[in-house]
Length: 69
Image (cartoon, rainbow, N blue to C red; front, side):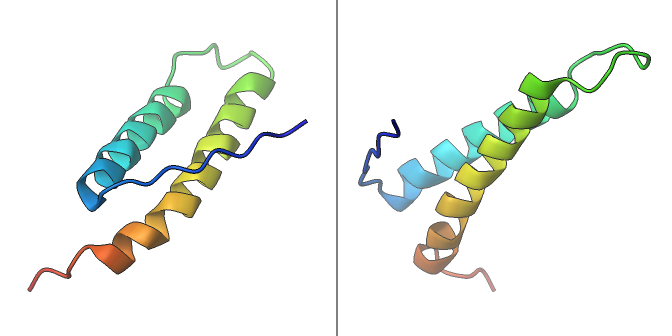
């Protein structure tokens, strides 16, 4: 069963969450592994889930943060 959680975040809070997700994504992407090891399913799943979360939060940030000149 899937549970949906709704959060109300300020633009600053949202940016901090996005920064943390990017850090987690990079940690998973660049973690040490032997070249001869087969693909790691947990790693691939983590990267996919983090990518989906970034996609869900990313467009909202672009719409609420003013563009810099």
